[in-house]
Length: 138
Image 1 (cartoon, helix red, strand yellow):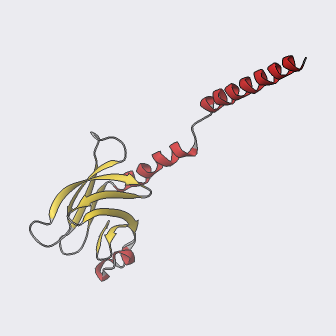
Image 2 (cartoon, rainbow, N blue to C red):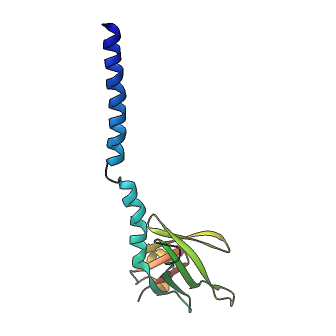
Image 3 (tube, rainbow, N blue to C red):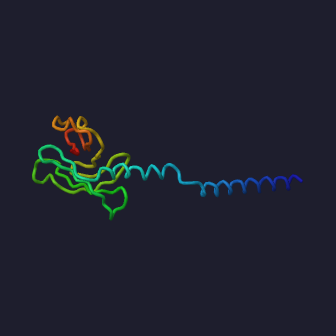
């Protein structure tokens, strides 16, 4: 009798475990999937041209060949003749990461005050790489 009871309990435990795995695999996608899709939905709104001071500019376009959340950043980021280039960027939590001569950079939303430049103080829709380097929509 004890053996039959132990066998029944073991069977119930095994079937309970397999049912929970099945339930987990049939569960809807978690918030992680939503979070992964969300960054590029925010940064997709940044596509277009923005201007900085003294002829500096940033032009963001989608890099369709690389997939969602990938961008091409064409920018003049300094006054020297060689400080114009196109960089590949990737969306991350409300920013675009890209590599430039100084290493990894982070492009994030801000306002004119966040750029740290008095010429852009009145602007509201800006993207900032670092204090002293920002690009705003007119």
